[in-house]
Image (cartoon, rainbow, N blue to C red; front, top):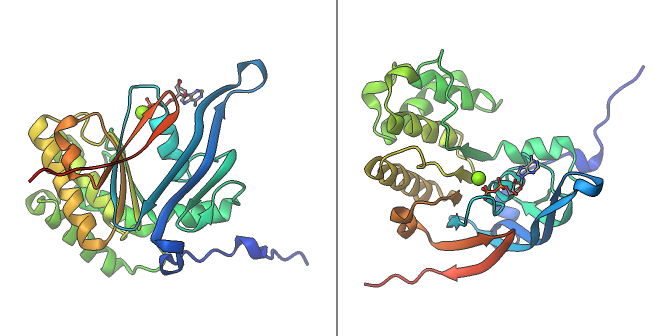
Length: 252
Ligand code: ADP
Ligand code: MG
């Protein structure tokens, strides 16, 4: 009889308390290429980036500079090719599918398009994220979803379908969904791009508050100058190169 035995390296227990120096994202000399042969094109060059636990890092940079590529690599949504990229202590260069999935379970994703399912209510959309985790009972999932929708100010919209919510409200549901399962890392790609200034500001303030309460690390791509002050640190990507770690100076 054939039995499937997982290889040792496939057994992944993501325990962030064992992280070296509390570094959640640890990138060294990362290069990334799209295409093959003559069409091969390098889009990321010698990226070095360390993000600590609970840190809110904003990434800015012109269109086409590689921000989304770097974000999707950090989230295990694309495989890194060259260099080193540790996410939650797991080396993603050469990681197995199982390792990648284990890492993804600890990450909340928020995209420019909210990606809510139209046929589900706000409450059901948020609950879906909890159902990916076998360690949460359905009662816990329901309670947690309710709690998250309250936290993003949507107590009275839980039974609404996405079509009946405003852009800002839909993005709040997406935040509730991303933070539903206490992710250790939240990756957000221009989450305020489709919103007016005031709703955009509210969205990032909600993210900031929830992240600080839960000790979550946030890496957020943004073009929005009005929200830069929520960052602990701003990094800038240009032509695939990262300008190093500008320390944010806050004037009193
Ligand atoms: P940004 O998010 O900063 O606008 P991207 O990471 O989306 O930049 O893109 C960086 C570069 O990589 C661009 O030149 C883009 O055209 C190219 N690129 C992005 N995704 C792909 C892909 N799937 N295949 C080929 N080239 C891509
Ligand atoms: Mg992009």
